[in-house]
Length: 282
Image 1 (cartoon, rainbow, N blue to C red):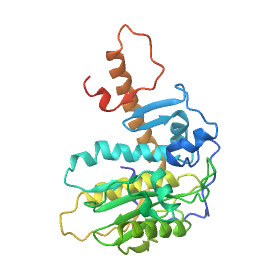
Image 2: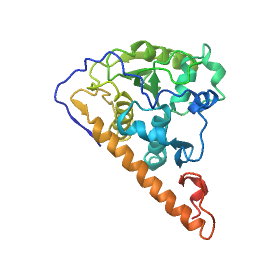
Image 3: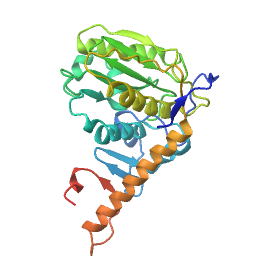
Image 4: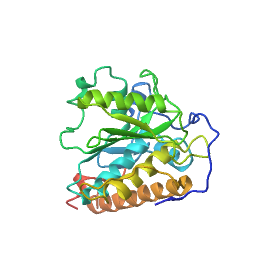
């Protein structure tokens, strides 16, 4: 886990830059494709359960501003390969597209059928983006993370360019309060690790999410009081990018292996390597 004790540093960046390759793709990229970014088989890099990673997504993970699809892959990975080992945990990792939809909907109760059932949920992670226009295929300039603790009635906001996304974090917290029908106290944490450039915000979201999930929530016993502070921690964004890429490459190799076993004697498929339920009989 590329998260370690901090050497004090504060970022002087006010907002993340727009990426020439990536960007925020609302609704899982559907708007992007509607505006002309068609996804051919050659563009697809890996199908991982419900996520279809493109070469563009992988490029942004290497050295750019993460797309919503790249962050969605990380959440899918945590759910499929980490959370699955904790069947008694009731934690939801909400995808960026759903977080965006929630923030842009005046009455979040209208989204109940599209969202997970939170009746038994204790905590919800939401990647937050500052995109404010639904008609822009690649909008927004900064990612942050909201952790809603339903059992405590508190939402914690982690912003690696503190306090740039405070308004967006407050709005997401308010929308969830409306959805849950109960008040949420909003805490904008001023001890979140701070990025040192204009493009690592998405990586910080992924790594802080993993740290809070694996080192805080899933290690706690029932009734434990947990500090959600990140004081004294620092994120190794470069190491995090490499770790995410290794995970993707390992699954891609495994997908290729499974496909080659299933398609002996057949013509080579142009679809991406695939990891998911359809392969589990291999």
